Length: 554
Image (cartoon, rainbow, N blue to C red; front, side, top):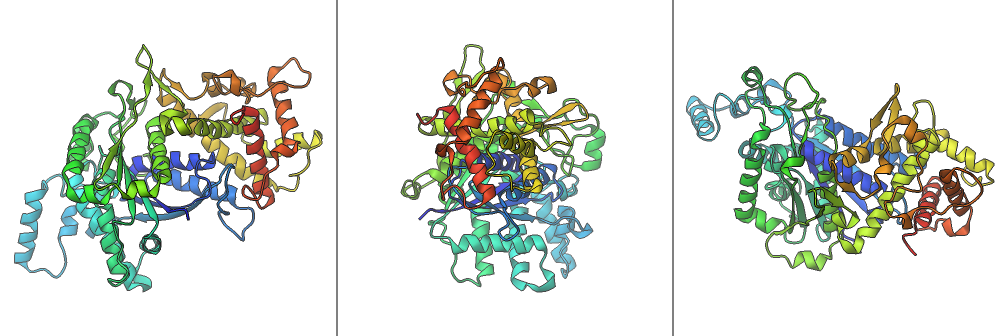
């Protein structure tokens, strides 16, 4: 029996790692799994959190054939093969009596002496004029000592409220309780992977306390019965060090916001967090694998470039571009979820994993599929992600789906109908539009004469002058060039280019003729493990057709 998979994304960086993970699921990297996902943050309006939650909702729309089974079912060897269930939890700092540490410490029903003791303790641990006064609803702003305490107690408080039930419990507390109860139900075969950075606030402070907080919260929810066995539940996590920078806050912003994360301190923050994790016995005993992921200082992106005004501390405006380091974190989850259970169970204390990548003579990274998932599974990674990128170019460019008023999937079906292939003409316009919308998030879309780049283009850009798996020609950036792109030549190695067939002066048309020829053949028909309804059959046959054309399985 497969292990039950759980994923927890913490803070803004954790959300972008989850975004990469979802796109790998769309490419078919997590076959035959239902994955329970929890987004965990202090900032309920965080732009990165909102973006990935919307992406998961869109993913589930694509997987939904009708309203009877929202989110569909898990499948294998196809696009969108994993089933994703989303749960949301955020610590609520929206009311005046919860906005700051100072407000939280002013507990009701205390006498004057107790209040003085409370304040003295807070003063001993946290600066009164800054750390005790900044608003907590945008995260912990690199104050990890504060964040660990508050996140732990936020989870415990939610469990206590959920246990009381009734109108007292908030929606996010109900969702957290449901998620934790699900871990408890599957505690004998559960794997929990945590996405978070170690250079900021929310992720760095939450990673150490998550296993214990889950265990203690379940004691409350179950009344002390059926308590989670932390030795049986397998925990893994990313340790993502700093990989981007931003401008320094002005003195005026510091005066107003009290505490603003300073990217100049990220390297020091990372060092301190890693040292703590390595020395802390609880972390060492509760985690099986911790994946140490770093990035060259010379290649850090400046997320403030071209932006005016104050440093963004959180909220809806925190919608940072995606980065290849986050894809490496998603690949770490792939490694952890695919490792033999016995191998993980035999690890006594947390094992630290890392993988080096090739560097050319100019210091540029040369990233292949094996850079992310190892040599043995590198071709699988390239095949699946490459097939999804080719599909994106077919729908968005060849058939115009990147344009605002065009549905590329409908246009593809019309083209196939004229070519004598009519198996999927009963797909509705809504179903087709959902496929288009997801591919726009993955690839790109056109808006008022400009190209808005999606996830994979942002990842490609973050590599700089280095190589990212595919040919640079697969990442054309101007609209005219995209109109003429050849979806059959995205790989640098010509052995994976689609064959040419038919008669045309245009090589791209001749390669697409091969696509049409393959989709008409029995070899491309999906089996029951891939699909059990019309929409799934369509996606699976597209997957089979492109995979055959790429010559990976020969």
